[in-house]
Image 1 (cartoon, helix red, strand yellow):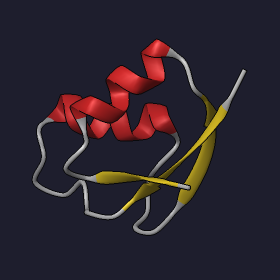
Image 2 (image 1 turned 90 degrees about the vertical axis):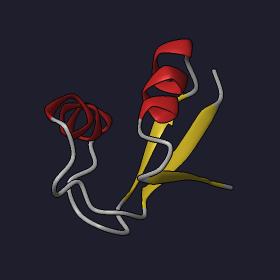
Image 3 (image 1 turned 30 degrees about the horizontal axis):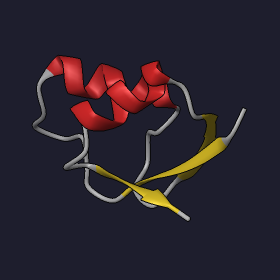
Length: 58
């Protein structure tokens, strides 16, 4: 399956608990951190939920 790189570009401070939990589930906890995940529908949904905090890196 294809891999996708996700980078946190904005802070999770002062965000709702569900958005903070989504960042943690993605493995993101610091600014500019990049993680590589499998490109599954579940991961795509998590990215969509916090799209204002992360970006997909090529």
